[in-house]
Each structure stands twice: as structure tokens, then as C-alpha cells.
Image 1 (cartoon, helix red, strand yellow):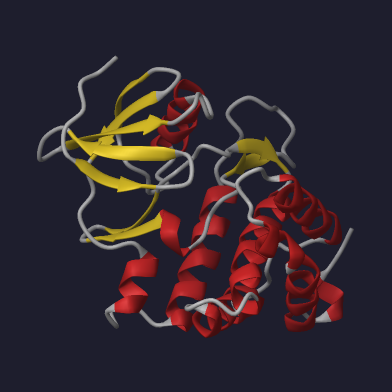
Image 2 (spheres, one colour):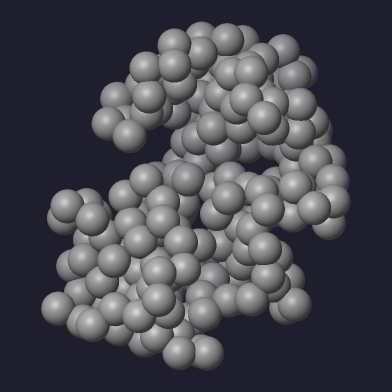
Length: 227
């Protein structure tokens, strides 16, 4: 097991430790996820120009990756460095850019790399521009599922009465209103199902899923939602 340095932060399933000025170690707790598979996807999308941290080493539970400087989008909201509408536009642009990357494993042109957890706390605003972190949920599949997951995550916050509820609502509206969003009926339904089944969700977060879906559908023109 790799020796850890100073704890830099903790999420629902992992902790991030300092190695030195250039690298950090993210360690999954309780055997959650597969950092080796995650690293392979990160290097694949990075090779196609998508903004992610570089990876130096990966085992099943440990991921040594480039240390990024700058706040997350969520942190930037709190200090007035980023507005919610700008955040929504950035999220939409990142989703489009990711889905322009060919799948790593599938030969089906309709299948793309999906992040499946792309929200303001997983985008860091670095001096080089936004970079996407936390690829633990990544899969290959239809882009509509990725759009659905990002939309549902934002909508859960927007209807949940939390601190950033209004910010999340504005960011969601901007994300869905930026050009033609890739949300589909099937993707939205599957996103809601997955969020409900996610063991890291609290009971309160699961209970607002119906209201979250209603909000998303209300922000989209009817013709946008396709099977």
C-alpha cells in the first residue's frame, strides 16, 4: 500500500492525499470502484484532447494523478468567481466535447465514453481551463444517459432546498438551454433509476427524484426529448 501524505480532501467514496507539488494520490475506501479501469479511460480521453488530469500510476484502489490548481466550480460559486449560467454553459460544452471522443472499447459509432457524474464539484477551474475529475462511474453508452445524469444531479440539488438550490436551478437551465442538449427520454429515465439505486444517496435525495425529473422536463422544449 502506498504511503499517504497530507489529506487534501474527501468525497463520498475516496480520499485525496498530497504526494508532492505535481502529484496527488486518490485512494478509494472500502474497495469501491476500479482505479485501473478509470485511469485507462482518463488516458484515452486525454489522448483525444479532452481536459482531464494526467495519470502516473493506478492500482485497483489507488490512482496517482496530476495535481491540479484552482477551485472546483462549486467552490467558485461560494467566492463569486463563477456565475451559475456560465457554469451551465461550461457543463454543456464539456458533455459535447466528451461525446465527440470515440469509444475506447466499442466499435458502435452511437456509443461514446460517458462520465456519468459530471457536475460542478467534479470540474476544476485551472489556469489552463476547466478539467474534469472523478471518473469512477465512467462507462461506454449512449450520450443521452450522460446528459440525463448531469441534469438529474443538478435538479436534485435545485429541488432539495439545499444551500446551492437556486444556483443549481440556474446552472441546470443554462446547461439545458445551451444549444441543443442531448437529453433523451430513455437517458433521463435510466439516470433517475440509477440515482435511486445508488447506495451513496441519502433517503432525502432519493425522495426528491420525482420533482427533479419534473423540473428537467419543464425546462426542455417538448421536441427535445426523444426516445
